[in-house]
Image 1 (cartoon, rainbow, N blue to C red):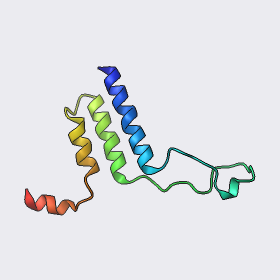
Image 2 (image 1 turned 135 degrees about the horizontal axis):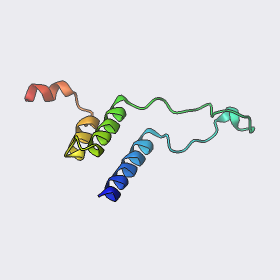
Image 3 (image 1 turned 45 degrees about the vertical axis):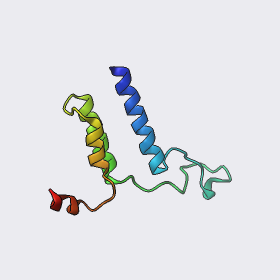
Image 4 (image 1 turned 180 degrees about the horizontal axis):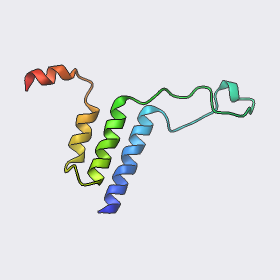
Length: 89
C-alpha cells in the first residue's frame, strides 16, 4: 500500500511541476556567460490550487480523505466559473 501511495505522490508532483514549467531550470540570458547566481528568467508563482492539491494529498496520507482523485479534481477544477456550479446545486 505504501508503494502505491509513494508512486501516486511522485506522479502527482511530476504532473504539477511539468504543468507549471518548473522542471527544467536553465540559465537565463544574463547567466549565459557563466556568471554566478540564479537564472534571471524564473517561472512565476504556482497557482493557488496547487497548495490545495498538496493539502489533499497530505490529508489522504494521514487517513483523513478516502477518495484522493475526487478531492484533487475538486481542487484543480476545470476552469469553469464556480458560481455557475453553485447555482445548479
